[in-house]
Amino acid sequence: MDKVKRIQQGQTTAPFERYKRHFGSSKALSFSLLYDNGGDRSLDLIASNSTVFKTWFLGLRYLIEISRNQRENMDIHRRFLKAKWDFADLDHNGSVSLKEVTSLINTLGLNKPVKTIKKMFQDVDGDGNGRLSFEEFCRLMEILCRR
View 1 (cartoon, rainbow, N blue to C red):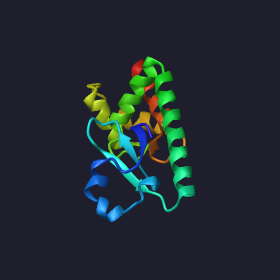
View 2 (tube, rainbow, N blue to C red):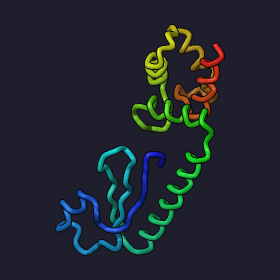
View 3 (cartoon, helix red, strand yellow):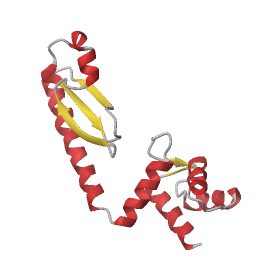
């Protein structure tokens, strides 16, 4: 949700325009999630009925607003960590692997041995699943800053 800029009703995006003959008269049930990546990327959806449309459209609009408010209310340090998190999460699955963390640390020029990175990673991986949540990632970055 962090990458979604806005949600809009109707069939106004380029993909909807390209395939409008396939979509028929479902404009009232259509909406698009527009991404904030500098391009024209969108996720275009058509609901099966008006109840489903209303549920999804209003629910997603609410989640986008919450996400926007959270970003705006973050302090500068937290925003910096979030930007590094987004950069590190190469597969965009909401967690970062040891490989992704190692790549980020090298990109930041911190010159830590892989063995040291692995140890720090394991220390903050609270659930031991081999992936770091954002909170675990923040703890790892705090450890890096103290050294």
